[in-house]
Length: 200
Image 1 (cartoon, rainbow, N blue to C red):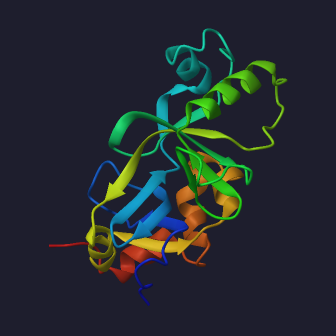
Image 2: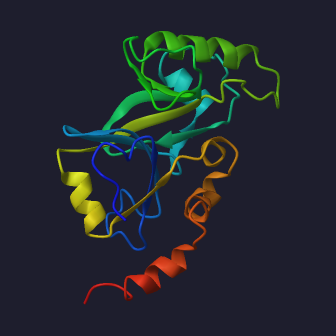
Image 3: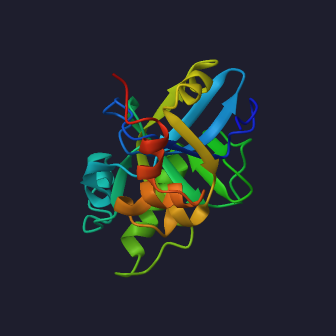
């Protein structure tokens, strides 16, 4: 059953196999905002060609955390040079500039102060130590105009599923697409057979 407008965020959008758009093939999108004016989300299972240490150096943070090989993600094709931090940090308020409250715990922020804090923490973090805020950097975002996402869902391009924090932070990049399907208790191959094997 199709969810009504405004109830899809927070949640995941899983690309149906095969989607046909190379920007979104086999992707899991964290849908952060959805309403009458459109939708905004972030791809959370596509690695960028540079790691966190390289990105921080490129952004002017000198050698802060130069050895940090954490994955940076391509959040989407819109404004690919924009940086965002996905994190578990309830202290960040959506009333703060550049902060999106995804749910009661998860935030996405593009604020310079958040990147400054990340650079400081990366520099002082011990090898193997887990960031208590689970910060992940995303480049760019995914956006839809009014009614566009609903049309794509109706056409079978996306499957909306409930948000699962574990998929965001505890599942490897390579397994997130399948694990997002598993939230509904199905496998991607089952979706292909349900769709009749593709368009003629």
